[in-house]
Image (cartoon, rainbow, N blue to C red):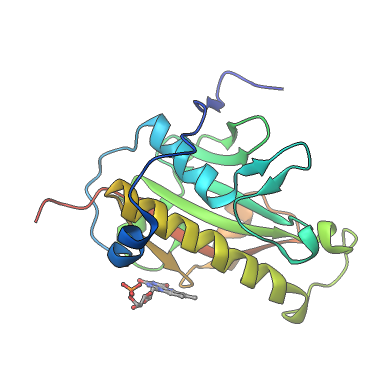
Length: 199
Ligand SMILES: Cc1cc2nc3c(=O)[nH]c(=O)nc-3n(C[C@H](O)[C@H](O)[C@H](O)COP(=O)(O)O)c2cc1C
């Protein structure tokens, strides 16, 4: 059910952008951002690139996942709060309205960059039950899956003239409770996205 606090995303642009080889040539990590917000169209396109559905009716995604278990969730931290990307409904479901961008990293720029994605693995989608212990080995596929999603975001950003950086320096123990995650949900990586200052 959609609530008033959710962000209804416009239909993502599934064509256009820079040619792939140009985007690869311009892919880079950026750590300096202006505070400007992405448009909702850019948010929609970014999230579709990361983890959108590109094949119906099966619901396959723009990024692969081991055994197509699709255990990954993309959370989005904005100034206006924490959201969960629902690719099928194409909405950002608000979890809460607190600004927790600073908690997504141990560096300074996540606090002020407009968007920080947090890639979370839901291990109940890989056969674990709530309360089961999750080991590092259990999460190997989720780390690999996240790499593909993050590269999609890098390429989208290169195509769109945005900056981004994938980040492992995430204070997971502090962040997980602020995201209201359950023990079977593991934070894998975060990725900051925003506009870069004019050179
Ligand atoms: C798994 C992984 C974790 C990373 N963690 C961080 C991080 O926490 N903070 C950061 O600023 N950059 C992080 N990076 C970005 C790398 O520093 C960056 O990719 C590298 O310096 C090469 O630069 P390039 O991406 O511009 O080619 C990470 C990259 C990877 C692949």
